[in-house]
Amino acid sequence: MNNLVRELLDKIESVPDFMGFKLSDINDTNGFGDNALHCVCVWGDIEAVKLLVENGIDIEQQGEGGFTPLKVADEFEHEEIVKYLISKGANTEALNANFQYDPELSARHIERLRDIIEDLEQGIDSECGKK
Image (tube, helix red, strand yellow):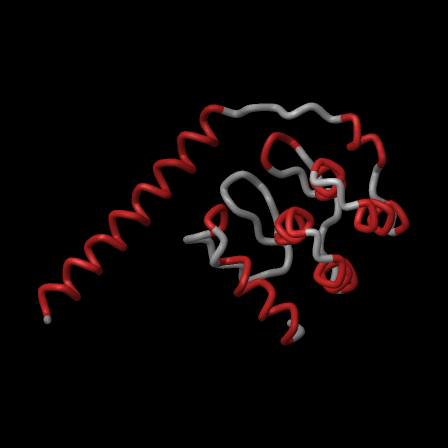
């Protein structure tokens, strides 16, 4: 894996929706099915989008709500990214998608975040007890 891709994936792992997920492969996803491309489409980072696409990320991955990276970029009004993804073959039908709420996925995500918070609190308590 390219060093720049690895650095980007490491950065994405620190985002709350990816916290606790190890992105070992460019196409790994979080609990909602979002891949790294979904994340950088939210950020509006065209260079990161290009880096991921050029290194083989799945541009049609359906993530949270059934949205593809193209739909995410459109929702966040990142026109340059929308145009770029379309030029790379993204299915434009995704632009008409409606958010599909999945209560089970959301509940699992919230439980995972609770576990992470609990682990962090225990670590803080341990550190404070050492001082």
